[in-house]
Image 1 (cartoon, rainbow, N blue to C red):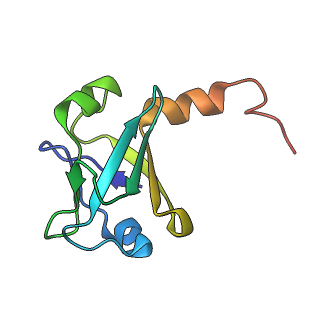
Image 2 (cartoon, helix red, strand yellow):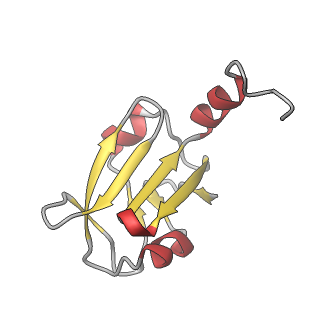
Length: 104
């Protein structure tokens, strides 16, 4: 989990380090209705900054209704060089969905 700051930055370095992303790593951003997927790619439009934080463009933050101070879930998959960012609303929706409250 990490907090989105008022500038749209996610400063959690653990996920970025787990992926092996260094400053200058270019990322492709796919914004779904409920989450963001970032993938390392040569022609990505986003770049990992010098301090190893991610910056999310305002249009993406608005699409997912992310506000400063919101905590987001970060899920890294190193083999695929992929990071998924789940905002609070998506987690609430997932937990409220049918089957989300089963005891298994």
